[in-house]
Structure formats: C-alpha cells, structure tokens
Amino acid sequence: MEHLNTVDLKQHILFVEDDPKIHKGISRLFQQHQVPWGYTFASGVDEALAIMDETDMDGVISDIKMPGRDGFDLLAYLRSSARWNDLPVVMLTGLDHPGLKNKALDLGATDLLNKPINPEELMARIRSVLHLKKCLDTIKSQNLYLEQLVCQRTEALEATRLDMIWRLARAAESRSEETGNHVIRVGYYSKILTEELGVPKAFSKMVFLTSPLHDLGKIGISDQILLKKGPLTSAEWDIMKTHCRIGQDLLLQDTHLRDPIHSTNGTLVQDILDQENNPFLQMAAEIAGSHHEQWQGNGYPFGITGEEIPLAARIVSVCDVYDALRSRRSYKSIMKHDDTLTIMRKENGVRFDPVVFDAFERCLSTFVDIHHQYNDTPSVSRLTSLK
Image (cartoon, rainbow, N blue to C red; front, side, top):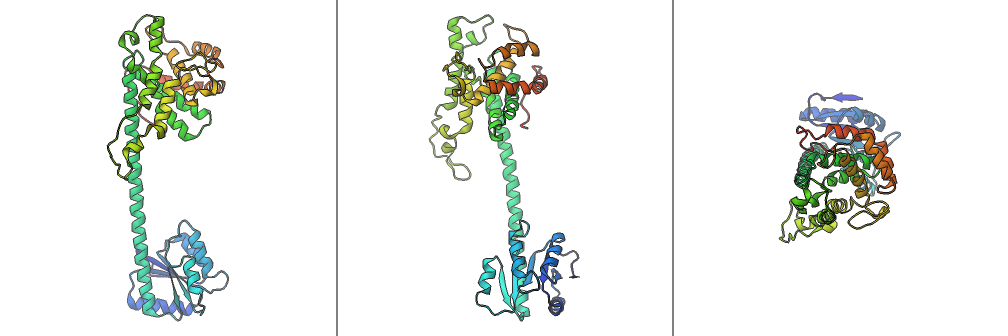
C-alpha cells in the first residue's frame, strides 16, 4: 500500500488496481499536473476496504478484474454501506464486453473507463467526480442543517403548545378552589400510570398532554355553585356534573375556520384543525367527558361501564381522585397518603378499572414524589418539562 500527497488536503481519491505499473504511471501523471487532491493506492478490494475504514474518501477509481474479489464486489459493498452508498465510483476495465458498462452503471457506478487509460480523460473524470462529491457533501450539510432547524422549530412549537394547554387548564382551575398545580400533578400521574400499563409511547405522551384539560368544562359552571363553601344541593350537584359535557363539547365543537389559510408546506390549516381527524382533541374530549364515569356504572354524565369508558379517561379518573383526596378544599382537609389508599382500594373494581388500579398500586412511590415536587406552594407555578 502506497500513500502519496495525503496531508491537509480537503479531497481524496482511492485507486484500487493490482498492477504496480499503473500505480506509478498515475502517480507521475498527478505529479506533473500538481493535482490539488490527495490520492492513495490499494492493490485489491480487501486492502481498499481496510483503508476506507480509517480514511474518508471523496471518490474511488477501481479496476474491475483483480485477483480474489473484483471491482464489482467492491462496488456492491459500497452501495450497501450507509457510509459509502453515495460515494462516486469510476470503474476501469481492459475487457471488451458490450454489456459491461451497463452492468457497472446498474450496480451504481458513476462511470466506466476503458484501458489503456487516456490521461486527459482520466483527469477530467476525476475532476468531475470530486465536484460531484463536493456537491453531495454540500447538500448533505444543508439537509442536516434543515433537519436541525426543523427539529428546533418543532421543539419550540411543542413547548408553545404545552404552554397553551397549561394556561387553558389553569384558566379553568382558577375559577375553583383547585390550584393550577392540581392539573400539573394529574398530568404527571397520568403519564407515569400510562407508562406502567405498557401502552405505546405516543399514547402515553398524548395522555400527558391532554389530561390537564380534564376539568376544562368548569369554565361553564357559575361561581355561585363552583365557589360555594358548603355542600351542594341536589339541583346544584346536577349542574356541577354538567362540566363533563361542557368540556367535551368545547373540545369537539367546530371552530368554523373556513378561510383558505395555508401552512408553510401548503396544507390547509382547517384540515390540520379538523376535529374528526385530530387525535389530540379526540383524547382531550374523551377525558373531559368521561373521567367521572365508573367501572361498574353509576358514574356521569353517560353512565357507561367497563371498557366502554375510554382508557385515557379511566387512567385520569384514578389520578384525579388520588389528587383530590390528597388536596385541601373548603369542605375537607388534606388526607394522608395511607388514608387515601384505604378509600380508593374500596373502589377498585367498582369505580376504578382493576387493571389500571393495579398499575396505580405499583406506582405509589412515584405518585408520592410527584405530589411532593408539585405541591401547592406558590413557588411551584407551571409545568416546565416534557420528559
């Protein structure tokens, strides 16, 4: 193996050729032209691959017929490699076969030159190959930059969406005694519980994002009922229970956006906001409408049972009840963790889905940590991360 002119050059060519005379002839040609690229010679495919494992190349010039593995073997390997699949490769041959060039091109060669090699033609092909590689590298660099930019914009959009969800959830909670930290805790409880159930990650993330909106419908309940210090009358309780339907309707109702507004990729915004095809709004509505349903019935507003109740709503139901019992209200004091579990365990299989409740039991230590981290002190004021 012979290495020549390889120091501090931006582009590098690898010659794969088993004839030492051709090595010397090409070396003299390059020295005469004082070429601005580096070049390395390998006498076979195995040696070429060993070199390429350690050195980045910008082009390969390879003979086809060589002892052992031939040039087509090298070409097939390069085209199957994630690192080298777009590397320009020019094949050389002294064989006179009419279908040889088509075979080379079909396997992914950039070109095929016949021996004996015409020096000027070889120089022209190498310049073309290196120019092509430079263009490919530029495109890759631009694509990488665009991917990073899209990722950054997507993360910013995700953060903005999360912030808007949080603000909307707090707007509903601010009208009642429940603090904004209640919706934070319910969000994190729901995320942990969903992950424990082993559902797909996308579903878990969606539950995390939508669960803070479970009581959005309280916006439609009057202060006289929502802020009443004493127990509610039967009639008032019936009104209070309508917050589930109100929240569901708010999340599913048509926004009547009909102007032909387009996003940057040409998609109609009204298509993006189509409630029937928006999984976020669908899940948020399911949770808002059904988180007070009960496994064996007697819940509200629909009185559905078992698996008729959406899974996300069954998950949030456990989390909401746990946090409500552990929080202070005008009509009750803070309940200790053990006392909360005593009450909730009596409702396992009655109010709560047994499978969800069993997962909840396995997550108790994490629930305690979340309750402590996002307690109702003024210093905890917002949902800050999506982990």
